[in-house]
Length: 299
Ligand code: GDP
Image (cartoon, rainbow, N blue to C red):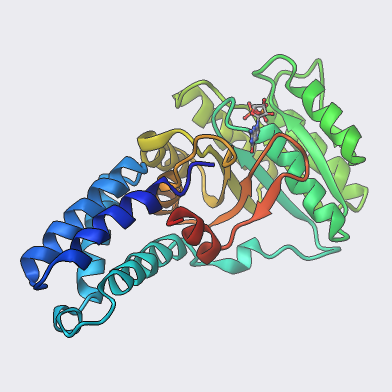
């Protein structure tokens, strides 16, 4: 994970303020400019960088700085608090996210092809299985050849019941059949894996809407590759505009992800990040904790 690249750049930016003999608006602005550059390089979306800059400025009191407090610490804390506030801003309706044992929840996963959706479905199912839930997996991905086999293989490994079809080509029909089957069987967490595409395109969004209409999900989770950089905001927004995304999972956080994508995903979907994918294996899956994430981001 290269998350702490931001931390290194911030340390550099803050060194300038620590070295300044007099702290005034100009010195603070110069430091903030450097901080903004560091944030942009960490894939934070431009609009959010501006928001963060203003937020930090509000939090920092020039007179206090001039009075000789540890300047670096004051600004660092303001940046930290501002990043946390941005990530937490997606948490509006936590009720939707609460799963209850013995009360059926249908959770639909959406995302681009290759984002890690199928892998994440199993990780999510396995996570709740360990907590005593009775999950089940439905493969409604009829677009990618081999998608059902992949889900089947993962589900078998995790010993989780699965449903899919080699013949039926309509994902809405498959998902409806699967959800009905597992409801009858008394499963309390029914996870629907939908198709992706290589890029955002209308056919994908239309298909997502049809599956959502067929299964009436209690929660839609958007899966996003954490390493896609500045493209994160637009991608997340396109999904949010098509289906009622309620939560986000960022994958591949073990790779080249710089962390800024997380802020973009929250801002674009107005939904919280709930898990991070940190590897290809089933148990490489972490519950998202804002403060811990920002600590890592800042190194
Ligand atoms: P889908 O097309 O969105 O369903 O994506 P897949 O679940 O098939 O994942 C695409 C590739 O990304 C596979 O090779 C996965 O093993 C890999 N992958 C998924 N999640 C992670 C993750 O958190 N970290 C890493 N390193 N690889 C991941």
